[in-house]
Length: 82
Image (cartoon, rainbow, N blue to C red; front, side, top):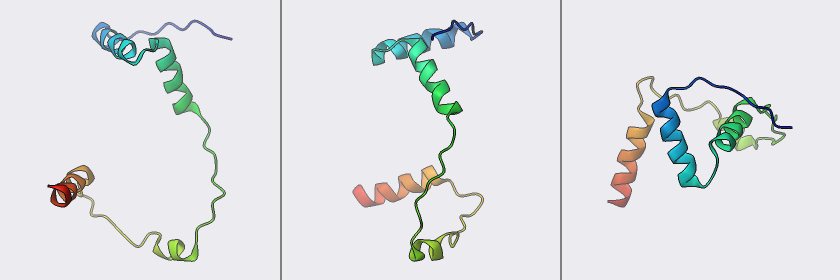
């Protein structure tokens, strides 16, 4: 059953969101509904058992606090492909 919901959102964001939804061929309501489904879904505990090798490696790498993952990834991919 669908129920109407009233939200207060900045007008410029609504306009951008409507353009985005239109570009995707979807309604803004469906995009918001799917977003709410994602953020409210209950976490499913995985029954995957780790292999002994994976268990031994788990937690063995400690990244520095100031590591910029995206910058480092970009740098490594540039070195590899350029």
